[in-house]
Image (cartoon, rainbow, N blue to C red; front, side, top):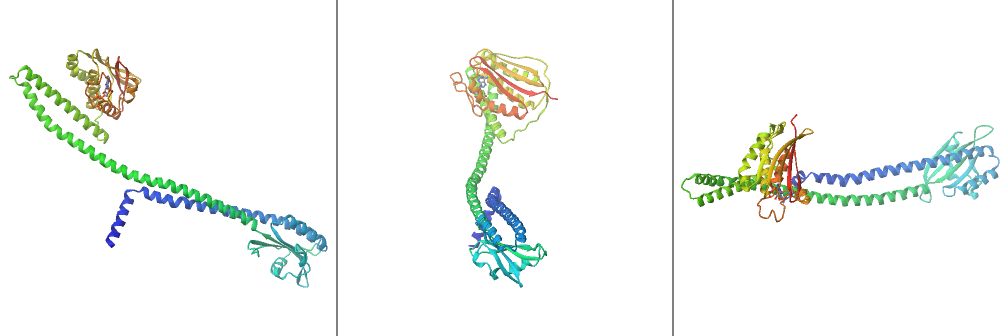
Length: 451
Ligand code: ADP
């Protein structure tokens, strides 16, 4: 039981270690809603504080003016009563008590009030506030209390200075209800939490998709592993095929040199040799595809004079071309050096020139070089079957072969141009095609001149 627990825990730990995105997901699940809650609360408390400050100022101004008036008219309670009633009427929502008390024989007595019945009484309930405010002539205080209606209230008290003596002649008390402000704040909080709920919902939805991405990542890694295994297997199989092929080729070459062979037998041997060469080339292509796919192809780039390489490749194709009745030539001119792997460039030229011969039934194959704008261009021009504009778009894709009447009897794998394109790009060059279907093609390989 304990062992199973430990196993589960260590498996979970390993899974998280191999998929650090999970930590990121959990981080998002916790941190985003938390950030919203904190910033929402912060915003609401700032808004509430501001509203309270405004309310304080409003009541303060009201009292400032009223106290000035009350000081002048302290001996005219009827007038003060009418003012209180008018102000109370205008602020029905927020002011629930508004009264003036004066002190007689050390006791307070209400001389004007919104609640008319209490005029003349001592209002013992509020005695504490009157005492506090009456203690000093410039006293002005706000006491937060909770009202009978369950809402927050402020008891705002201010001393009324006597105009003649300057001592405290009375106190004005206003009871301000915070119900309206609190209701607005409550509504804000409610709508903020509604928004938060929807935001959390949206985030959860996104994170569920993120969880799917984790699945995909795991799957992707597995696929890569399988892909790697497949590549390793292909590379191993291709290598293993090469060994017996070399032996067969050796024997076929020896047989070809034998003087006792009849003409028909010589033809058979040369067919065997040609097939072995084809097979070898195919194995070479497969190995190149694997190496390029894994980024394992090595390039020994150096300052290279390409003219001898071009001449050599053209020369090596001259017999095949002649047998096909094609005219093959290369223009000799001085070309600046380029920085490439000479063997790899040779391989690309063999492929491109080989294709030109393969896909040209009659006419010629010409190779020439041009130098312009700091670039060297190698142009392989044939008068062959040509390639349509649509096929030209896909020409350098892996396994792409033009499907047409002209190509149906020509064998190939569709790998040569893909390899050529990859090799040229890896050496900092470019390859492209210009062609008119039925007229011929130009394959152009370009490299910057070595500085
Ligand atoms: P493969 O020749 O083995 O089929 P490549 O990758 O070398 O593969 O070429 C891809 C395709 O491009 C060929 O199948 C052929 O249809 C077309 N192609 C290549 N070179 C020429 C060319 N010089 N003229 C016409 N078509 C060509």
